[in-house]
Image (cartoon, rainbow, N blue to C red):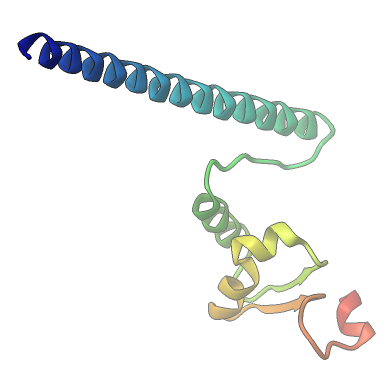
Length: 117
């Protein structure tokens, strides 16, 4: 009996270490993917700036939304040309909530002129 208990303890410890190593490896892969994503994004920003675009990289949706709110004056009229990314970030709602006039293809009932504004 004591021998089996020891074997069970050893087996449990081995599985726990293996699981921890697996989780550690998964975290390393996720971190590596994030680093690759960030590297690509920063290279894209550099390429855009090289071609005289103003560009920036934000790591999170909240950071991106805050950056847009700083760049867009509260009295500005904004047109969103059906951008799914901007919809996912909640840009339209955030800008309208602070008083911006927002024209978006996703709004029902817009005239063709309003869509083109």
